[in-house]
Length: 269
Image 1 (cartoon, rainbow, N blue to C red):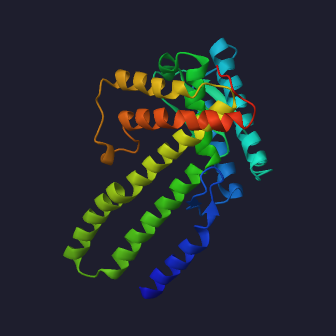
Image 2 (image 1 turned 180 degrees about the horizontal axis):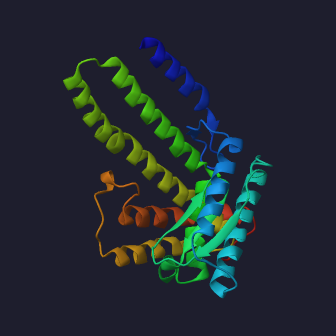
């Protein structure tokens, strides 16, 4: 058992040394692009084949055009800050899918989907840019790979406990406590931190792309109104509360404008 724990600690120390270029924070990531991207691309293609992808409309074209502007802005930032070639393995794709779900999502490597259900919330091109910046940021920060890595650690912890504990009653109590505790104290805060990080990165790159970062807080005010205030407590959620996001985005908007000014962008859509 001691050997297992030691091996795990050495493994974590060896992989937790990658740095997020946008935040300077260390990233937990066991998976390289060559491992995770092909799998993500295949899953994305399968999803598109099984759903109603909208093409040729003004809204579909807007999704693609905003996505291209946002990802180009990210590349400008990366090149200017000493990370040329950071996106060489990415294959950006932006699709609008007919679905009333109020959501958008991104897979590793830059595969993004907007559902039509979120368009009444975004309302404008700039509103789309708020969501797009957030989704592109997830891809830039390798959040998908980090979630997989955290899930692997969670599983290893469960296995270690089951190997070490011999008494059946104690093992049952451990499994119940570990399941709840590792989620509430581990996986959920980890997910919320990713959402907050994507909000911050996304706000900056949307500003560099020429979109007004002041609109981000307004979008989340509309999202809050849409939900009618119905949401689980923040500590039981994968996402920060609407109020937390509105507060953060309002406070960060001036910083995003300052970052955009470094790239000569001083007026915004």
